[in-house]
Length: 323
Image (cartoon, rainbow, N blue to C red; front, side):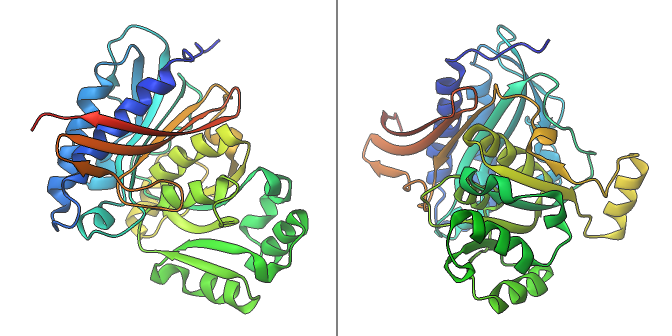
């Protein structure tokens, strides 16, 4: 039976995302994505190493960045004392947003008991996803993945007791989504186009009251598994399926002997309710305010979710830093 994480691990995870945000915030608007992500990654690595867990990175940085870091897949993190946990982390979800001074960038981390997170093929990069909050969870059925967008939106609108035109859909602004965007617009629903921040967009759709009703479209596999931690914790629903965007990626998935056509739900991605998720804002978003520096003081705004209790905590903190 998998070990259950300590109820105090959530605050430790919060320190991880806060450290990443404090490090990344100094790069806002400076146009240096490598510097921003490297600095945030070092901060995450150092803070994870101080936490009393026996953690293992399930999906590492090498898939997202195309280079190796201290947060590669299979890396052991934590002091080795405490619960054995699967760990997914992204020091910056939306690096380009940070370096261009644009809204929507956050740092995030999720953990669950060892062996309960789905481990994708190492070279699988893209995944098709649909995410809704707990109010619309019953509407999300596997058929939604292959159905026209209008059909899925009608199901969500029905359970939310509102017309389709009052729905707001989060979609990454990519050429691959041209047809999807046209379908959504054809039925009159509003669209929030995001240039980056796949996981943050899923958070908006999963947490009630953000103004977003559903996330649709193809994004990163790692961001999908991280998002599943949050979706599971708040009682939302998610469907996902690998969606290779090149012949090379398709061959990798086939050689890994993984059913690339399988539609996975939240339980398939994170098979435990003992999940924790933490995020800290770097630049402002619908959920979290931007980090703010005042001399030696830094103000952060974070989100902490605990699956076992369904608790959602918004936490404002002030830190004293030495520079």
